Length: 626
Image (cartoon, rainbow, N blue to C red; front, side, top):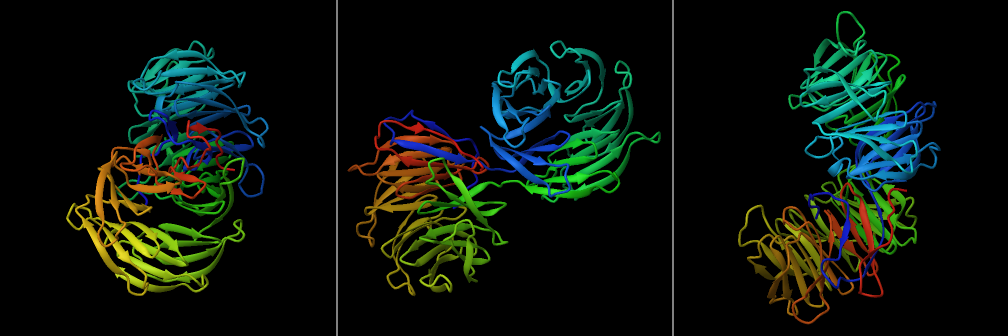
């Protein structure tokens, strides 16, 4: 069951003691295309929580040559002389990429952009200029990165600053009160030269021209005399996401308009006496928008949500796509088998990882059906992939090259849960419960079916099936149903525990069923599955649950009001106590006897194992995209 959550980097909490000892083995962070920068030869791509370096000058395909794990998602970046500066979380991270094959994070400045809100970022030599809305940060911050390992703040001034562009000794800053032209020949002491009554957030300079987002317009300014700037003209261009400029041309990234205008890259000429002229347009391949762009000479690289594109604008009227690199998508469902974790990635499909590696999670292979993937389960060397278009069976003998060996066209509707037991796949969806015989994985067949609208949670124990059912509105039909599947061709409902408000998920351990609801965890004694007995409500609300060893992990979300993981000790007699927590926002949680894996959407996934001693919670490392 995939629940949209407030996505956040995972941190550990020891506020509840004593927590079960859990060792953080690593993480692989993923996400869409957020930021991009360029120099003469390379493009620097912010893909999820990684910095990827791509060669852009050769005739070969637009190809990533190196990747660096980052402590968060870079929402903006700039580069000068091989030093890449990125706004991440609350601070500025400095990366030495002078050897583009081995970029290294070498420095950091905290508290310059709270919550990652850095509206503007620009570089001049070894100085980096960061603008933030004053209510969130410091206004304008100038950082000296001449020594990348020891960046120093050399200027801060409070103002409602938004976008910024810097060229030579001039800086243009978009503010709530208009566009300021600053003399930054000495970056430690910026001084104001002039003001223009324009407003927006994005801005770019190609001297003697400047281009400013002014509400729903792109406005060009002549700044040949910085003390007396002159507006040249404007073009109607709503939903501007970013602006770059080269040789008197404005390169403008826009998102789709609700009236039907598509987003993409616009090329605008400001050098003609007749005023601004749009020369060319390249639509974004992603649904909605181009979000960021960078330009160098005749090349442009755009970040289009799901893909980075390289375009040649040698002919501005016909931008030519010359290469692309896919961004990494948001992580959703998880299945575990042996040392493998199979992760559903919203853009790539399936990503297969070795999660037992001492170095942390390591990607081995990928696979995509070409269709939407709702759910994934694994058993031994086989993976079972489900969606509205049916079931696929994959052989993972070689996880680097997963092989599709079986296919079943079955009308699941939306699949919410898969479970595998004794070579039978139990598929719970909006339409009911399907039992599929996968003893011959090359030829799966549907063995049985029971109609039951709105199944959300599923657990199978010795041919007894536990499902939770709920609708959009509370009604007595919200239930925990217990089904006898000993005759898999004719499953029969044994009992129903009705009146459980919004039951999301269920796990079963030692004749105890735990039902996750927004209002708490409900525990049932199911020693007699024909007569389940409610014992008590536990702790906080949840939407997904999993067990590992003696512990039950219950995932909440912002709907329940309790984002993160609550940990319960279910080995004790009586009411299980809460013994720990993992903070963060998650989409799914899966557990095997040795590993706990959490899917955190754009933040990727986290891998844990229990330790020998229950005395502490330890985070020992982090690994992101290889």
